[in-house]
Image (tube, rainbow, N blue to C red; front, side, top):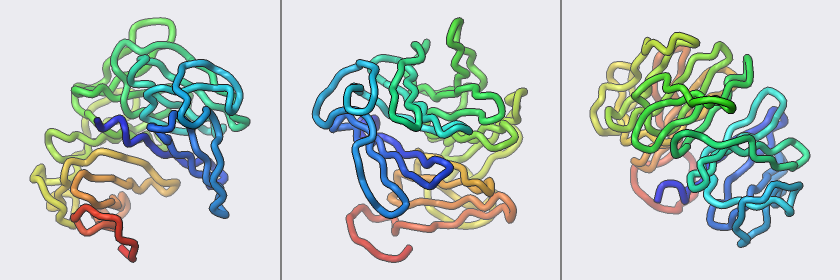
Length: 239
């Protein structure tokens, strides 16, 4: 039931978009904390395209923005890619050849990539056959400004990087052991890394099944725990 968790993305203006999966709608949180329903109708399931509350969603999961603040999301039930403009207009771009989970956009050229539930990263080809770029990577993915793909590889408890355009694996972050140890890229451990986002500075943020959020400092080659103790709960606090 991982798809029920929905996803999250942020546009260039600092607006946060949250996939409210069980309510079948997309929520927007502005920098001042105002929450609105951006697209879809709460508690109303469907697949219709449309503007704002006239659009319908079913099983959307992955979400990401492009260089123009358009949102792209995956529907794990319909096997489709949907697009939501900054004005809230929703269109279905097309179908995928696999059940699409996480999604990311290469901001250099607008190419869309997604992960498949049982493994692999695929390049979406709207008018052809989707191209598998690697067999690894089964959860969150993110693409940096240079087109390199980062992926959570759950079976090995690592984060892997694939070089732009060649998709050669050229970096592994984590020692492969199940855990939440901070440290350099060789010593750090992850507990089933799942969600993945990249910041404007190129650092990675990883949501783990071990009830914590990790920061991967790409300049200093170090992994930090920035939130969560490793214990499930709903307690507010610092770090």
